[in-house]
Image 1 (cartoon, one colour):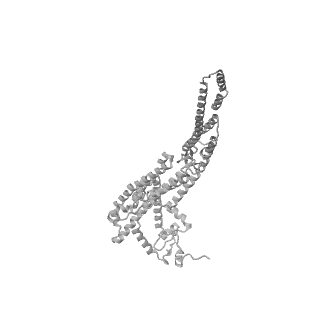
Image 2: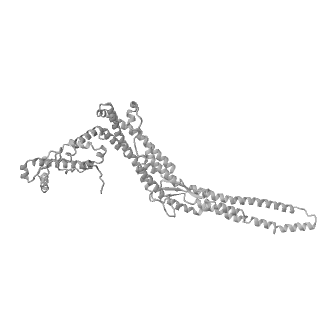
Image 3: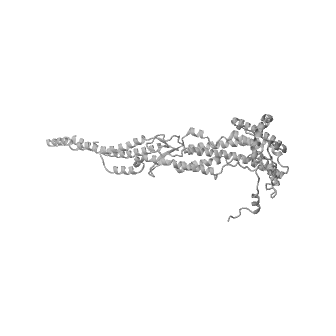
Length: 522
């Protein structure tokens, strides 16, 4: 069993039956309508028997008056549509006059009989007014709206025209200007973004607000004329008028902010397909220009490769830019401050705009998160291209070089080890300096410099060991040379001593000199 939704009186009002639009009601007469079988003949008589040439043309003043109600920018931009509308207005006018003439003729019962069309008199219906008198309520509401509803005031139309002509096409930031500078680092992108938003906010405050004040001030006498004499009510009604102005300006400012957020979201969504490209990588992997430059770096402490900024910081920064749209225009004062501030010492109130909790803000931030996530996949795949240098950007190579240097090796073995790390430095230098991966332009210069420095540092450790060993070897050679020189410079005092010296000289080629040759061999 359904529970009762409305009380009995409300339900009785809802149950009141309203007749069709062709039926007259109390206080609202309507022309009689022929029965359905006779309506085709009725319309044939109206259209074929009353020549449009017999009807006075529509007064051009009426057309001009109607045209003035159309915004000027629309009149100039859609001239063809206005011509079509004028023809439609003229056709409706002719048809209405034809119908009026025929209805007037059919007021005579004899004419109804002659023309074969009968118009039964329809009794007016109450449309609920007998049971529920609403006439006074409607009049009261009408008078209230005429006194307190200001959206139809000429000031509102001029304020709207000003916005349409000067500011409706503007945005808080210019995509065209930003595209000319792309790609940008995150810091540069944020800086340019803030600069443009603040510039537009300054323009609105220094140009739009004074222009609105000027429009209202030019109608000051008209506004004063519609205000009541009673001072207290006058203050209240003037407050309502200014609230109406503020509501209109708030709607306009909200539209600018919302359009700017939508344009920003559209720019970000160009990269929604992501960047999960497969090798081989080329400098330009995507068809559209990347937006943000990110740097690929090595971290020896964490023994991993990193992107700067990381995806978390980048997402937060882009989401904060969305907040910048409404924050940058949140301190634009209402016209009250310029109109009455000095006289009334009013507190400054600001034109309302988009808020942080509005759905368009949440939707734009969600789009940013999804696009950044889609463009994070390709970065991981691209990082794997540097897997061959894992020993360099981790500490594995340090441990290997340490173990290598703990043992003695020949100079040729040292040379092989040095050449290995020099070759790695050359291989790193031959890698791509930058790669466009969807939303990002990956700049690998910091990573290449890091890996090159690491490879050179490891080679230098081996070189330092070779230099140290060479110095020690040189000292040993010099010591042996001095020993040999001292021995050969001796003066033998006998034949036996001379024989021993000759034997020592011959033994040098198979002893000390051979050992030196082996030590110096490469």
